[in-house]
Amino acid sequence: MRNKLRAAVVGATGVAGQQFLLALSGHPWFSVSVLAASERSAGKTYGDALGSTGWCSAESPPPEALPLCVQDASLLSETAGRDFDVVFSALESEAAKVIEPGLAQKVPVFSTASAYRYEPDVPILIPGVNPEHAPLLLVQKRRRGWNGFIAPGPNCTTTGLAICLRPLHDAFGLRRVIMTSLQAVSGAGRTPGVLALDIVDNVIPYIAKEEEKVEAETRKILGQYRGPGEAAAGSGEAGDSEGRIEPLAIGVSCTCTRVPVLDGHTETVYCATEKPAPLSAVRQALSSLGQSLQGLGLPSLPAQLISLREEPNRPQPRLDRETGRGMTTVVGRLRPETVLGEHGVKFVLLSHNTRMGAAGGAVLTAEWLLKLGYFG
Ligand SMILES: NC(=O)c1ccc[n+]([C@@H]2O[C@H](COP(=O)([O-])OP(=O)(O)OC[C@H]3O[C@@H](n4cnc5c(N)ncnc54)[C@H](OP(=O)(O)O)[C@@H]3O)[C@@H](O)[C@H]2O)c1
Image (cartoon, rainbow, N blue to C red; front, side):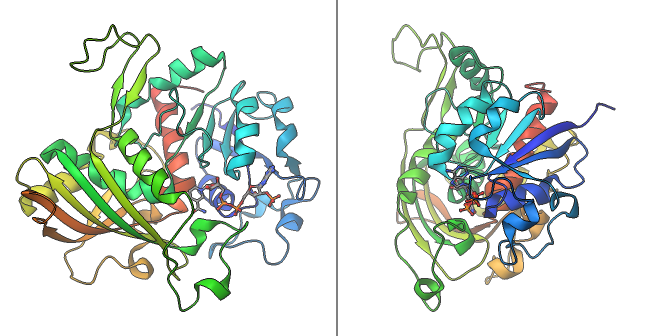
């Protein structure tokens, strides 16, 4: 058996960083050796940096993390490769923009931040959804002259949507998608977070930059990878010498709202499809997602990437967000959709924003790429 890879968790004090510690506690392939955050936390033990109110999961913090000294994330590139082999980053995005490249020069960086998601040489990977995009990481390494790479996960609202749309597109061909989200407060993190005064007894019909992110990321994740030298289909072009992703050319239109739920993003989704989408075939397509991953022995992979509920009042965040330890997207209220187009389907999904939508998803991606030999 190989030695465990030593992991640094960066942004370890925040909502997503805490979930990294939980996802990596007792992990068979990774062990957390370094914690880092802003200079506000640097120099304190992790326990002191959290203080009495900083931990925000119902699960207790891993006891082995509490005495570790939190390092200043902006200085961490100096010890990358020497003190740790891989980075799990849950930095606030502006900090990620500056800090993640210095780390990726030396080691792979799995990130929950949006800072690099939209760069042409950066895939937004979800295991089981867009495996054909993974080779773009090699293009990224070569282009930037890095030993490592930056592999960001999607925005937490994109995750469940892309997971459900992939099998629907493969089976029926998507034409148009309309989505309205009801997003949990933990999705806003601690800083600045959401004020109780604003969210209790309320729904906030706007989340800054969220809709644009979800629309662009969904098209990118469902897009076509053009390897080095491959031309776009029917373009007559000579081909792209670097490799890139051609976003899926469909309309995706979103409204993102914040609701008084702690964890778990609910989304109502309306899809117009090219082919008829009978509900029995939709059920079959959704429940088959991720079968290619079973058998790889990935420790964070749930038994099902998508779980279907037939009851008319499911999914609900309180009842369903822990399905598959928060790694399973729960889908219900499947119905035919015939207003958006001639054929289609509509449904409600629930995705745990800090687990599959953030740290859990990033750890699963790292497990999958390690298994494929991308690092380690
Ligand atoms: N929350 C979610 O559900 C979720 C889901 C998907 C993606 N994300 C993304 O994950 C990232 C973290 O989100 P979060 O919700 O965990 O936010 P958060 O609770 O506000 O935590 C932010 C983390 O970043 C650190 N940080 C802030 N400014 C920094 C700086 N200048 N230098 C170094 N470290 C700095 C903070 O350290 P200090 O404690 O020392 O200030 C803290 O550890 C964000 O990019 C977010 O968009 C979050």
